[in-house]
Length: 278
Image 1: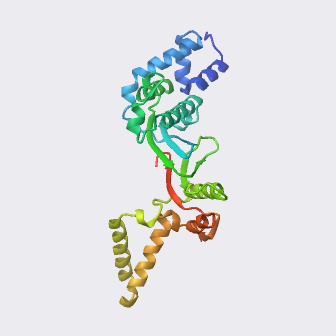
Image 2: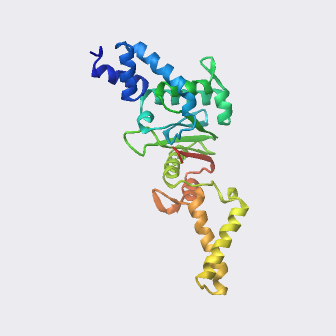
Image 3: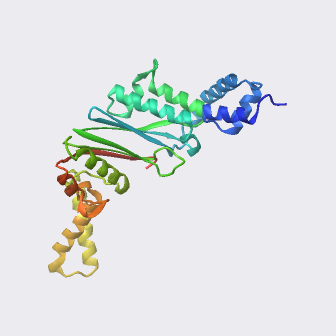
């Protein structure tokens, strides 16, 4: 007869994030000794690391923090939503975020090479996967600097950690700067702009959009004399969809994001937006 209870299974699952059958097998082999079972789960996980390499990591979370005008954000992935909401995965993701802040790394490769607890972070990623029984990956890293930086994390499901994260920086720190930066960060989470200003849109993309608008207008039989105005109007529509400052503000569609920031006495500096798996 098994020398453990349902409560023991639950406790070990919470410690490891491992599946029920893996926990039960480990407890069986360890004759109910939770610490030995934990060790067995880790050993088994490390042995299976190579097999997990090709697996998809479409779940996970976004974590972010702001310190002294520098916002840092990471996306850490796993295979299932069960692991994404497990305490050990969340704790590990916070360790990744702390390493990103401490290292000042500009990209994921540099972050994975950073030493944490005496080891490269890349080794801790493998160990986390061994404990959790799933492939774990650090997918993205962003750093945004400004006089005021807002970090906004959004849960798409109340049962999961944040799936969408935004960093948004403005050039002012007084008055309404913080409130405006936060409101725009929330807007970015919902409206997913691609570019900060029109100047950031690649020229070849603008020309391609203009060509498509022209060909579409001609196919619709629009008069030649009106083509220029129609094309420019549709190009403006493209900018309003893709460029942050041109978008209609989420809290007041009568204003653009640019107007909201101008009223707060600040200008946008940079933003980053992550959505898990996107």
